Image (tube, rainbow, N blue to C red; front, side, top):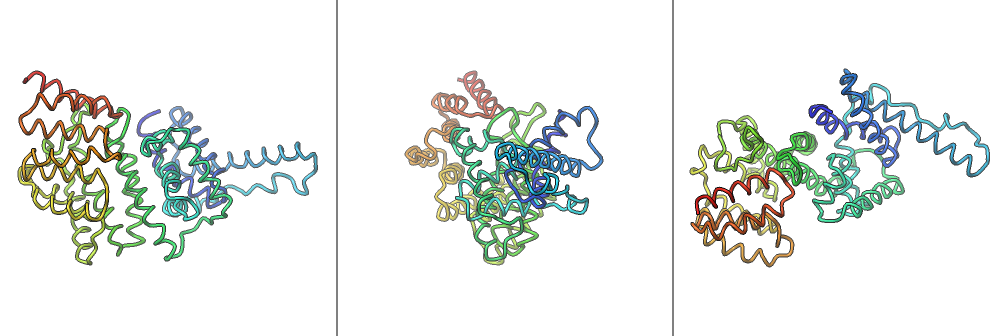
Length: 413
């Protein structure tokens, strides 16, 4: 199937699922039906062409699949009980959504539904990544560092919990919305990150995922424009995604930040992101997403890499570390400190991270150590850490980038 069609299907999937869940109410059955509709599109559209209204096509096909499933289940029950039903199966089948409903985008409602307090936080995040983010069960399992079978069971239980709890398909009232907002923003953050830098596979960037995360973040911002963390997350996405065109070379190879052609950066997105950060901070907001956005803004506002205000970035990371006990934030802080105080100081900070089980053994820790050793002039010591990072990463572009670093250092040494 053409890549453009794959991206279209991924973008439409949560919208179609939202429409079908709203009409039928059964989340689990609706997701199964939508997956069948997506599979049908993947086989049919390359031969017949994309329909004029692909979203309506998918909704109608999913509705028919769900209707068939209801009829099949009714027939099974008749066979098992050997009793006549008072009404025929057709009378139990809800008709497909009308055109007015098809045109409505329920993705944000679906997002809040998946983050219902009836679910545990890990289950809510996993289910939302699957239903709204479009990630596969294997990708979600990788993100949570658990076996795929374990994640499949977790998602299945989450869908069953939604079914048995009778959760309605509607935007929650303001007080309940606030309770779910943290999980909603975290899911959007994870979806964007997977799109911005794919954790596995041949693609460095998955624009369909990052674009969908930005679209949903915009919807959340339209709903809650005065929430500092909503503003911060949208700003972080815009400021980071603004560098997309410069992050890969002509053959898909990774181009690190300090080597990027900054004339390719999206200045409109940068201006919007900076404005969101400025406005939110003026209101006194200072959450973790907003601080990350402020760091991204400092990078984006530097005309050249050597003009980056690294002391300000160190200060912002210091605030972020007080707010969040995240080893990957500490890793980025170590890099920033190395840029201000020298690589030896950054390497000393990495020693403490080696004792943190959440990041110890992660390829990024090896890659950063190798980078700082190289910057300190000790290329020979950097080599085994580059090799370890290349062996551990599941991203092919990351591995290729690290292997090229290894080859270049071996030639120079």
